[in-house]
Amino acid sequence: MKRIALLAALTLAACNSGTTGNESAAGDGGSATAAVPSIKPKTVWVISPDHINIRGDFYPAEKPKAIILLFHQADSSKDEYATIAPRLVAAGYSAMAIDQRSGGSMFGTNETIKNLKHKAEMADAENDLVGAVNWARPFGKPIILWGSSYSASLVFDVANQFPGEVKAVLAFSPGEYFPDAHQVGRAAATLAVPAYITSSSDPDEIAKAKAIAERVPAGKAEQYVPATGVHGSSTLIAAKDPKGAEANWASALAFLKKVAP
Image (tube, rainbow, N blue to C red; front, side, top):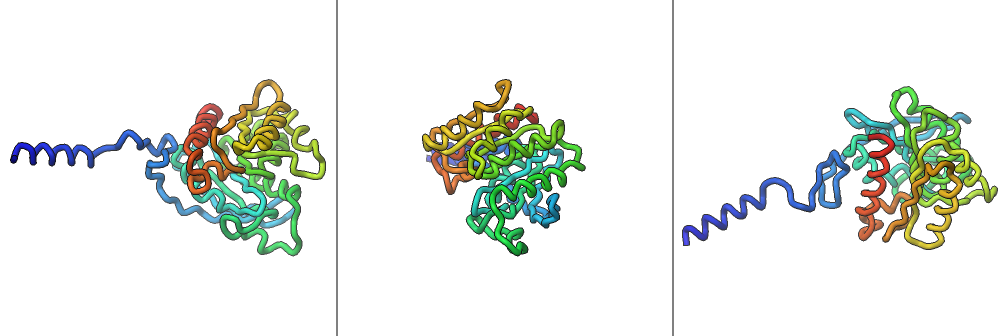
């Protein structure tokens, strides 16, 4: 009996030490079971070219491989990235999420909108994205643009405005969401940097993403079609996409590792 008790104690100790097969290092971006540390972001204010004050949350990495600028979807805010940005930091990237002038309270308060006198259209927010790039330039690090829904469509044109400075774009659920039904395709057709283009698993969204990916020249576009996915960057949030988030994270992180190792 003593021998059995001793073996049981040793087995329990072994199970409680180290990591299990489901855990991964935070430096690789972690997994659903990995403990990605909670990070309190630094408040920043970005000035758009048309002189609007844009609220941002900055998540600095210790030795960043790049700065990823995070742009939200319609009716949303910087808080769309409250769980996404810390994971990017864990993978070695600084991240900054802004409250665009076209947004809302889907994930939290949009503090830019609170100070506006008039409601803005989605296309107006392109100036906010440009302001974010100008904010990031003095860091001297590669800049990566990351958009969700309508902002995933704007990142193509914004990237074209900063040749040699924007390293890559990630577009989650882009589409021709603007009055000019060919605006995004035209911008994609002149893109000079790698693009990661994805969508939900809805056939209509997949088709919209494909149409844009096919306009990107020289095979620079990588379209990822998720087995399970939801609209925009929410496809990486386990609470929004419990069945697909981890696979979708693996794909996005693999792209980042290629463009900013």
